[in-house]
Length: 403
Image 1 (cartoon, rainbow, N blue to C red):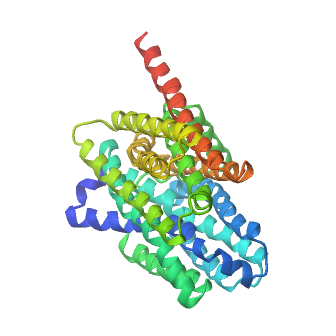
Image 2: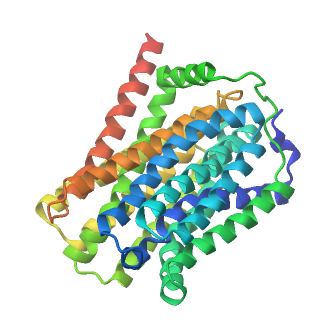
Image 3: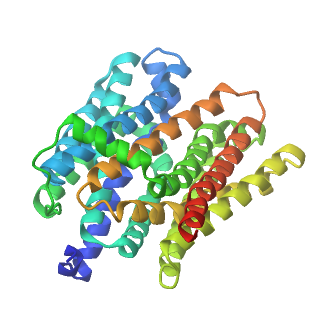
């Protein structure tokens, strides 16, 4: 029996808010300090590429850290590793605030990611502990609504704090919010892992990861989520140049455009919840993949032949929104059969998400040529990989089962 049966409506709503806020720390940590790049550069007397490197290193820390916290949460329960990660995040965030040179700042950014990723990977495992497949998708959609507020408000909050209190105050703000979260977890979040693995070693962890890698169904639903998410992170990395430098938007106008995409994610999460009343997670995921590919293809054509701002932005809006038709359902599907290994499965899934995010953002920077093509081509490739990878693995597997 799933423990969700023991949760009444109020407790479920509280859990949605708490876990949604925990998973929102990572996008907040990425987006909130972006308006302060110039101030960080000047204060630490460094170059802009080194300041920008702090974003890429954060992605790496997120990817590697999840591989650690997932197995730990299977062995020791969800709560202890979660609190440990949040404590590391707290001190690393203070380290960023007190850093007096760029290299110390970069070190603490990696540590910040390594601690902060615990909230994302363990939150998904907690949801898997409590709910069955379709309920997991609904709950993750609710979490996505809470988490989706982060990219809407983060740049504005960061810009305000930076303007009136300085860039270091951004990290004081994050560490304070994190401390409150630690207290809430400590006193109000129950332990949900009822299948704790008492024996766990490196060999077992590696065998689990190899098992996930060989699981066609796991990889089939991992690929579209990772691919479309990679396209979104490519957008985050490349859109300031495209919209501000090439389309001549002001930073304020760009911030509004950025926030509207966040609203698109919220809207898609709400629609996904409604669709789950009469469609399966698998069907919605397939629909989302087709929407994402269609949007990426139109985006490619527009950029190549008719680079009109409103057309490009509208298709970007659709592409990014499609993520919330794919991600909650993909995660619910791949975690459904992983009760005893939910933490490790969530970690493996998350590691791929952030590793590909790093690669896609690197591609946009590496192939930079003062045109929007590197960004839009990367997004198109992400949409294409999502479609081809999913259909090759899932549809081929279904045909084999029929035969």
